Every structure is written in structure tokens, then in C-alpha cells.
Amino acid sequence: MLNKKLNEIEFIIFDLETTGLDPFSGDRIIEIAAKKFKNLQKIDSFYSLINPKRPISEGAYLVNQIPDALLKDAPKSEEVMRNFSDFLKGSCLMGYNVNFDLGFLNNEFSFIKKSIPQDLPIVDVLKIARGLLPELGRYSLLNVSQFLNINNQQKHRAQEDVELTFNVFIMFLEILAEKGIFDFSNFLQLFGVNTKLHSFLSNIRLAQVQEAIDSGLKLKIKYFSTSSAKVTEREITPKEVLSENNKYFLECFCHLRNEKRSLRIDRILELQMLQPKAK
Image (cartoon, rainbow, N blue to C red; front, top):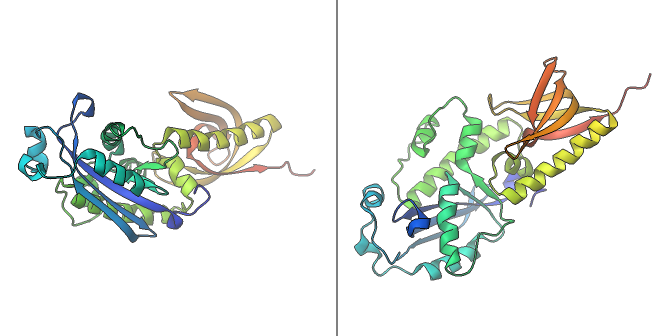
């Protein structure tokens, strides 16, 4: 999957509604929806209400307007989660502010002695928004969709919010294409939240950078800047790799700007070692 282009990947956008905000305090999922697509063409969908076996909090009801009575005859979580686990296979999972939903998802999976697979690619569409729209400032799904001139309204119901997130993602794919970002590995490197896969991709870059440092070679790189959302090509002379807060930085001399720079390793999209010119 990591060697594929974005238009070759099966994506799943999902959303949840819950009884409250904290799965570790007993809050449960009451609605789940997902859309599976490839090259923007719908492949499949998933939807279910869920009987949470507990009342919905007043705060949650004010947001999603799902009454307890609607869930009385809904399927139990165990049945729905087994089906959703099968639905996930072979895809890249995405959501808006996805870590919030992942906490609930893993909690529900734990009741059937399952968990989200460690090698499942997971991407946060909120992270994409922050990376591609650094000027926006406020990144709620509603603010982002309005900025992109998408007319759908956020209704805080799972199916509607999945569709809104899908429409936002379509716009982001266009922006990524304009920047020349087509590889799934680059996309995952920039916007993924799966620690295992992110570390795997970063380690590949680290090994390449360290080889260049050890060999005293310059590098030609394609680099994504989080501050400007621009992709630039530049030649650099790598000096050393530093780590801070589980992130790796390359201290280097940038020949594009003729100054010392500190570059995020996971923002290097492409890398080529430059052999010394023959004298």
C-alpha cells in the first residue's frame, strides 16, 4: 500500500456520535457511519445506531439530538463492532479530529477483545487542514468547510458529517495535486497519526540522511513547509540529526536560502544524494 498513489488507495471516512465525551468514564458510541471510496468513487458504506446500555448525557443530546428512545431497539455494540472491524480491512481510515473517535473505537473494540490494527493507516483530516491552510486559524469542520466554500452544513450526525468531511477531503486532494503530492507514503508521512507506520517512514528518511552525512554528500530534497504550506526543491548540506519531543530535525545549510536551517525529517518528501562534481 505504501508504494501506491493516492488515487489507488481505498479510503474510509468515518464519524461517531456518543453518549458523552469520555470513553474512559463509561461513555459509549451511539451512532457510527463510514464511507469507503477509491479515486473519489464510492465503493461501500457502513451505518448503524447502537444501543449504548446507558443514558445519553444532556450535553451530548443537545449536540446530536439523538433521544434514548431511538436507541432502545438498536443493535448492541458487539455486533456492530465485529461488522465494522471487517469493513476496515485493506483501507486507510480517516476522520476529522480522528484521535477523539479512535479512543471510543478502541474502547468498543475492547469489549469483543479486538483493537484497531497497529498497521492500519490512519489519517486525521484536521491535521491536513492545519497543514494546507496555515492562515485559517480556527479549524472546526464547519469553519474549514465554509472557508472552502462547501455548502453542506455540519449537523452533528454521523452520516451527514462523514459526507461533509468527504467533500472537504476532495478539496484537499486538489490542493495536494497542485503541490505535486501524489504518493500515499508522502501523504501518510505528513498527515498520518499511526505511530508505528509514521516511525517506519521516518526511519527510512533518517537512514538516508545519515548516509549522506557520513559520506559528506549534499542532498537535493523536496520539502513541505508547515508554516507556508509550500513545497520547495532545494539543495542542502546536512550536518546532524537532532531529536526533540519524539520528532527528528535535520540541522543543515540550505543553499536555497544561503543560511543554516533546521528541517523536520518527516517533511522531506523526496531525497537524492548528490555526487561531488568531477574536477
